[in-house]
Length: 338
Image (tube, rainbow, N blue to C red):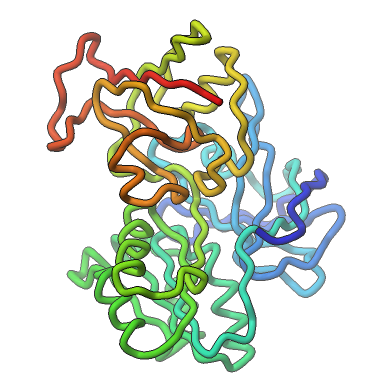
């Protein structure tokens, strides 16, 4: 993690709010105290959820030189906990509470070659890196994958800017990205640093293939956007017998939030499944754990002994992927915390 990680809250004024693609909003904000935004930075926004306010993180797609105007790209989540709905309702002239640009995903300038991989809305974290590398005349390739072209934000502009250096994969067009083939190609064409942001299944596949090809772990850098999992979110029960806690985790909240509201004191930092500080011990699971973090490796996830409470969930699936027959029709996760 880089510096610039201590948030300083300020007011931002929405200058523009327009569609960037189906289900994605382009929001331009003028912060009260501008700071230059480097590629890979994001801002935290205090989202008004009606009954409460919660922090949400959004990548900075672009910024002018002095940071006076920051462009965010926000996808309306199908199972939103309220943050994306709040952002999509913003109109020009409204004020929000936000931080200065924060850096958890820095681009290391000076590598021999780069591959930038964006899956869906992950392009918001990658677009600025690609723009800088294009300006520097670096050797890079931008790989952009999505379900359909109408849902891929900034696609036309990116194709115009990056020309032969952009490779587009669209599932609906039958050109889905094969993560293993991409990594094997990197392994056979010489050293490259890979920066990626996208859904957890895509990043898990890339990380697995990266290890299998024996590529240097330090050349693989990534950022999550939190809650995309292998299964749709559903209500489940979490309990900590030692503390006498048993509570429901609703589909629209995280396990960490539910535990905190039930009185559990769980350490946490990134709340995006990256740092591992919120890891807890799994004592039992009725159903299946949907690991949504990038902290544990495949073997650790398979062992189901620990999980990251900030993003991971439980579902009523058995290991074969079919719906399990469970007592009260909800998965039940029994934990202990440090």
